[in-house]
Length: 183
Image (tube, rainbow, N blue to C red; front, side):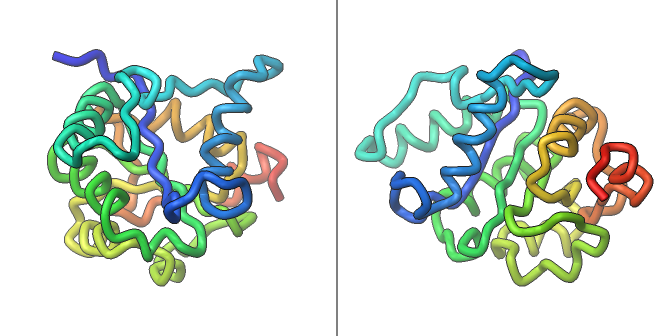
């Protein structure tokens, strides 16, 4: 059995790794926060726990690598930006595997918001794979803005054995935002 202590990060790369062109910037920011070591933010990146594969690798090799990473994960961060819903290959596959196979909670992190109290109003940003699993109540999701204190708390708190409340529409309350000096 895998040691499930990592956080799997999914994002829409939009076919590029050029800064400013996709949500990879937010993934890189998560890695930079971890590397900085000047505060308590830390993420055990599941992508670092399995051998890297190239984008040119065969699809079967990529799938096996993604599954190995998910097996070693306690949760998933899904970075949701303006183009995430347009991803029609890897993000839907990652969501399907996360929810249906590995039973991991999803930390839905939105790039363009300061607070999130009514995630159902953001459904237009969700990939279809997420919408389906929220609607059928199989996804355990906490919806938060891309804010370091909330991400750190969610990574620590929500795991394969401690799901967020709210049947796929979980949020932090206003008091939590205030306690973290976010409002």
